[in-house]
Length: 322
Ligand code: TXA
Ligand code: MG
Image 1: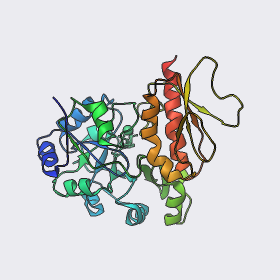
Image 2: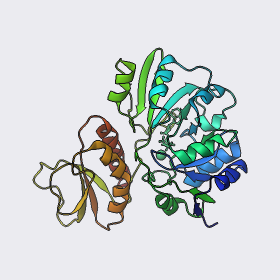
Image 3: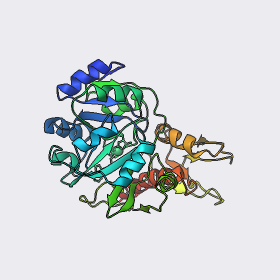
């Protein structure tokens, strides 16, 4: 099957209604969409990306008001955040109703719900009578896609259609927020910073993004977002960053000068860096060097999410070299 890249919401809708998969644009990364209420379609998602079934999927809805059809209870903090950030790069973990298959949540009592902020995809979602489940549209473990061409590179021949909505404007996956006993917990750093969330809620939130390879721990697989080329985090203040007899390409940030490599944002703008991250990782991966070296970003705002992605890429290399 040759995968078609197109702009037709109508085609996308037909495929989804037939239980087939479609890659869809969102503001964060491209998603691999299937009917969330159809177990065969959900199974096909896991299969198309080689994703283990213990890693649950986010469901996507066109309106915040629809959330109550699929979840038992909406905590007041979730509503506050949604009024401010949804549609947008934030995902809510909420107690699911029985209508959501256990396959979607990998057996968890909570389902992850998000309203994406992309005109094409919102239009598509409004024309469907079911929510779509959609993980990032990359092969399991690889860098997430932020263009239709990225999706094609990984999934050509595995899905019938890619809905092309241009380049993703945020470039990082959504922030995942959990609610427990009046407490708000961030489970994955993403397109909305902890600081921004605290400002809306007017109270501190907890960061619990501990990485793990334990299958039942939701959300955070330790090795992920990995390039094929080994990646190593470096401190540019160190005099020698490369290794003898090894070629490298550097992914840097801010005003320092690099002779060889990519700069996520010469002006030191974290939003720009987020938008460039996955594209530059892919380009660096295609450069044919021995190593990718990546500079740490400031540990604040979106910098935290970017460091998280880079660290996971680095960790994967460690695992595979064992
Ligand atoms: O921005 C995004 O969130 C993108 C776009 C396509 O919406 N989607 C995305 O999906 O990043 P994925 O599958 O690549 O990452 C979803 C993360 C996974 O780490 C998964 O374990 C976690 O969300 N997750 C999903 N459902 C969950 C649940 N019920 N409980 C805990 N974690 C959950
Ligand atoms: Mg992913």
